[in-house]
Amino acid sequence: MSGAERLTASEAAAHLESGSLTAESLVRDCLERAEQRNAVKAWVWLDPELALSQARAADRAGRPGLLKGVPVGVKDVIDTYDMPTQHGSPVYRGNRPFADAACVALARMAGGVILGKTVTTEFANRHPRETVHPHNPAHTPGGSSSGSAAAVADFQVPVGFGTQTGGSTIRPAAFCGVIGYKPSFGEFSRVGIKMQCHNLDTLGLICRSLDDLSLMRAALLVQPRRPIDRAGSAPRIGVCRTPAWDDASPDTQALLEHTAARLSAAGAVVKDVAPAPSDILDQHRRVFEFEAARNYAWEYEVHGDKLSPALRDGLLKPGRALPLSVYIEAIENAEAFRARLDNLFGEVDLLLAPSAVGEAPEGLGSTGDARFNAIWTLAWTPCVTLPAGTGRKGLPLGIQLVGARFRDEALLDAAAWVEARLG
Image (tube, rainbow, N blue to C red):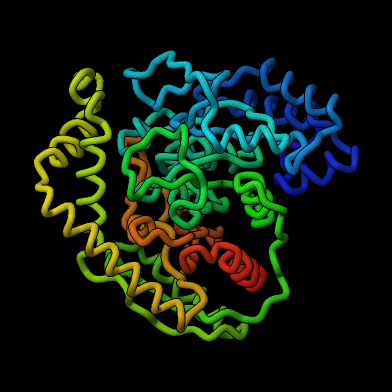
């Protein structure tokens, strides 16, 4: 390996554009790193020759597009026409979609190389798979975007696609010490992504640089790339501990308080806010259960014996029993919460909240608790997690920044201001 595997997506794209790096050499380095670090188990499907053939084609074409041959990892609930999409389930073992998901097609159109398929939990839900934490294999990497987070953190690929219905992009990114981004609901196309909850599912990104987010957003939205503005003024920040605050570890609580104090000292206007009602997680759960139970009707009825008890009995059965009136009430409460947040963002530019309960839990039987993420998934707000420290076990901790709906670019600018002040 030449070291190219450690470049961020933006750095790699710049080298590819200048000609100081070829797509083939970059992809080869990523593949060698993945083979060297196979014990992380980030990939469910990786065909080196297919990846290299894409890279060689990019080089022959002069490395066109925004991505210019940058490799991308694709979570295995996202369709790829030339690779299996198996949803982390024996129900879909060997499944070959006939077309790419929109995000994959757009990444290819922008010159990206689809390196392979990253491990997902069963149907991007709770039942974990084989991926381990890249910094300590005795711990979970989080989920459900386990493989994408671990692969990016371990320098096996510069950027990966995740999805989020509860906390499946932000939490594993925080656990693994990288950047995770959940855009405003509906901003990225979900065509070709296995549908779990139509009011919650969101395509996300995991990477190692905020600049990578502006690069990938441009590719996925087919828009000119807008560089992140790092010269903006200090933002107004609302510290939102959320109703789940008492469940946060002492390390997480201390990190949030310390971060708020540092940003205030750096010039930000910081104040406490409490926009989320105490039962907000119950509202998310009801939407989740009701929609998942119906979207997985075929899997439940035809292949129920192949589903994990956690999915079949812990989610789908309760969801089937949930009355329509309870679901509608949860949808209405979610709308009221979003309206409250819309008003709050007239007073603050972003919210500061925990990214996760704490460090990645020990053991592989669980991917961790999503309570500090589900709130913002229900809110449809854009979120970014930034690496911000370590806990007492030496594993990464993150901070979560939340922006106003459809003000994603402003959130990324504010995140850059925060990142610069935290060092």
